[in-house]
Image (cartoon, rainbow, N blue to C red; front, top):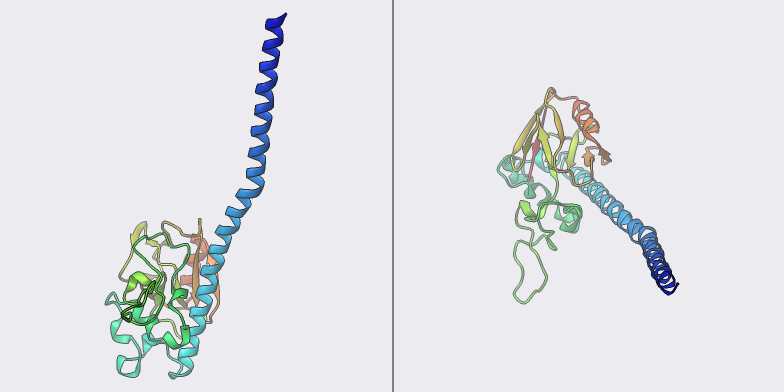
Length: 230
């Protein structure tokens, strides 16, 4: 009889422990997981907002430069035309420092490349004695490609976007990419789950999957889209 009571007591204690664990797990699911989801959503929205500000910067720069973006303007006139394809993608953004205000918007919080780092100032050097300052000096300070043929008068042309692209199943990075109408372009190593962000010449930003990405380039109205990838 005593042995039975002891077994019953142990069984009850085990049952109570399992109940406690179940309650703790339920609380974790209702408190921690939603926060994680919000964090991911917040990161995606930050990247979208970044590209919207970048698009506005391009359009503002064009207003003061004969309706041309930096990529269609010579260096002697303050543009970056001659730098296309020279692995200095950051220069296309750097000439718009007055319009962009801060280089922080050129870095996506969802960036998966550990070699990239958000710059804190458009200055190329940091004064002696300054701390926690990162100068804007190379392509590792940016998270977006530039559509070098995009023009202000063709609103559907692709102007900016996430550079994690694959063409015909091959990952492409850090080069001048020519996309033809028959090129199969998809997202590679996606930052935003199965989607990515692209900014159009009219200043709008779209978050699209693989089909939407291909459609966006098909709708530009040109047979070739040239992208300068950092």
